[in-house]
Length: 151
Image (cartoon, rainbow, N blue to C red; front, side, top):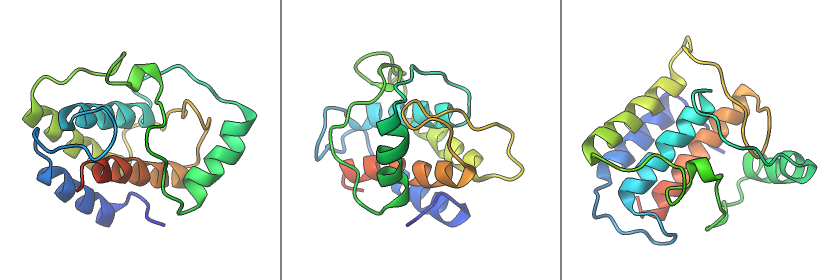
């Protein structure tokens, strides 16, 4: 299972550079630019800079968390996100694709940089995560959405 680290961050950044505003989604409602903004919002959440409503239940913080972060099972398509990260609700609205893509590129790099200049936030579904779980989540979340656009 891959984690976000200095090697995989370069892989994700290269995949990000392949993404164009016109890249079609293979599933879901978001367009490519909305997906970039969604990933930026998620990285801000992970780095403790964005707050979203929580739905932490025993089921979510134990079973779902274990499956999502401790197995290699593919994440299901179409699972709803929290409203504050939902591009059709309170997520950051796309403005300039090149700037938003550059911001995501930088956020991915910042996430793996040592020493960190941020403190991990609290996951709105899984609760408190270890550093290793955050690194695994970050890779899997970005990979899931890049696969959504065939990259």
